[in-house]
Image (cartoon, rainbow, N blue to C red; front, side, top):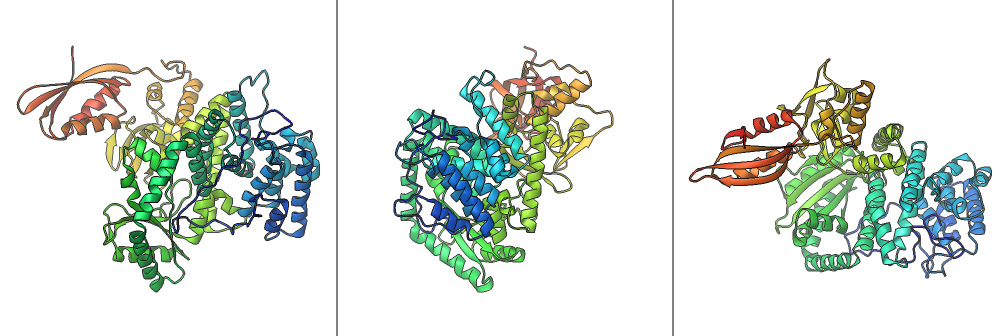
Length: 612
């Protein structure tokens, strides 16, 4: 049912039963974006509670429309139950509406939340919804309604991908479609306990790979964090429990030390900035686990970083707060980041600094105006009822993303290709780089300078012939460094996309643009069925001085050039040794660039292609 399982109909993939909510320790959790609604002693959120909430910010006409939507939903879902076979199904749309009302969403969005499962799981059609509540509500409901299996969609996976494609198409016309879907998925994940373990893992995996990333791209960190934690619990219940207990134990041991820092910061800021407030961030255990797994960082090392949020009234106070914190604690060199002057690509703004306290505690501060904090938590949803420079900027960033989705949709040949493009390009973002004009571009880890060129503009990518990274000329296939570098793309009138670029570009935008140009100009690439060029195997000999760290510099250089090391043999005696590498490179031009850059490494005496 929508994303639910009910007594009177067939099951679908995301129905849920009650699961205990996440707990937190004082004062480690940031406050909710809106005043929490109290629930009856049994914890069930009812229509009365919803009406009291929407009456806070809606006029009587709108609240009447919300109640009418509830009455229709209650009538149509009569006799349908949740997975536990005892909870009336109407509790689910009420909870979805509850989440959106806490964010002060408008009447049409709340009505769509109440009605989002009606056309899919009852005899009420979307046309009836439109007739009673208007085209906007109908569009939102249709956007989140999943497709059904048929001859063209024979598997559950095909249905999921096609439904996702339909939802994103609807989102390009009205972003509130995704807000309803995220609130729907949030409640389903909060009540995941009664489904079978295999189904729970499948739903959690889909949430982690798709909806967590979608919330992040929408700038809605408040829901992203919760979905991450719930996904972690669904995928790894034992690990998440152990990790939570370990964190609770660590925080209990260090509560006095953390409280000392918290109060010293609060008191120091209060003297000069009367409207300031300080919050302790709750640890994101999903991120802790990922860092432990991917970077081999021990739990203790990650827990030892205390994270505090400082909120002030205006922009000037942000920089004043930064100065006060640096007078109070010793700042760490290179750890001050100004995402106010240069906002991150999805609209996030803050000052960030990492310091060492007198008690040797490492502390990371995030300094924002309250407006920046609200936007950082609710993203594009924060722009619905308010207007400010920060919200306008976030909306502008979001509008640019929507245009990119439209471009993907126009170029994709089917929903599978669209889904792959969205997953591979839009949601694996970890690297930021600047244009010479100071605009920041967001790229996936492993992206190349050609990817960067296409991220700026398709025509710039089509005409690029070289690139400079922080003023140093680099091969176009070099990876974008993860150090906020400034990248200058050099173009030429006769320059054109090279089919061999398909061997190293990472982003779907670059892949699509290169393929499109090649097709339009009748150029055929020697590629495999996926359109990528096969790599060639070569051997080189690197003659080096036998000093500590030189091999690490070589492998780091090869990694930055997107070269796979297949084999390595080290020979030689005395102070000179020969490192024989077997490598995978894209072509002879790529090999020449590899040799050229290796020769610039200190203590590398010579590099040559092996004739064996």
